[in-house]
Length: 290
Ligand SMILES: [Zn+2]
Image (tube, rainbow, N blue to C red; front, side, top):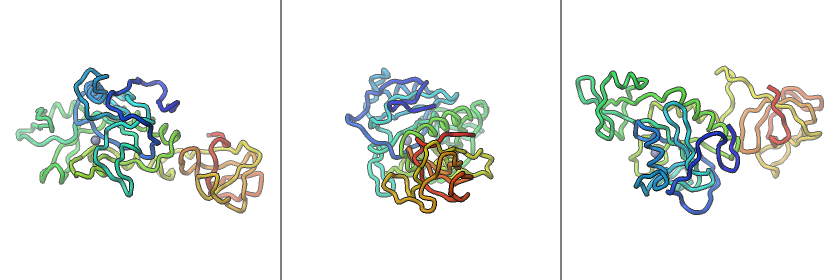
């Protein structure tokens, strides 16, 4: 998957009626659940009038269904209404700075006794229905109450699409963090995407690759005659000296990415760069080798 002109290739595109005018520069990805079981229903709701519904108050950029189907309902440079009153660090009003991804998931269910559960909309599910849906985990959550609640599992097909889209967004934008609606909600109401969502694994997509996890290292080769190795992800950052620049044919491992810049570690070089030297390079001048 790739982002072109603020849209992901090869998925459904529509445009929600519930977007602010003007453009944004995405710096964060906010993960949500839809608080429902039905993907098309959530998509139509978040598209507002364009989806044939009466919703005038909320939207998002993407909805990812249980089977991995993804619908983009707003270009990534448009301001959607998914974060509500929100704050992350010193950044307020996350709608103006983020891409909102809605994963189809009902969130918590409370025990109704006799092995039955009730979701936040009052819909009753039997244990067998939850198992058929893919199972659930039990977890406490102080915002919901003092009990233990059932949180349906996010299917692997859905998470796989989420990972591919998140990776494409990391490559296209200078994403500084991947966060949850719960952690930015200033009213303290929100519980999404909840404890069943593998938030840490998504957050780690921004961090250093961990070879112990079995992830293949990302190896690149310098394709410019001299590529500056810098101390930060910008053309204004000081060069790391020695070596100052990497010569054509130098092989590096990509450890972290920030927009068009990559933090790399030298593996081998026909020039004077020692193995293990680290710094930032512009990714336009390196090619993936394996
Ligand atoms: Zn949310």
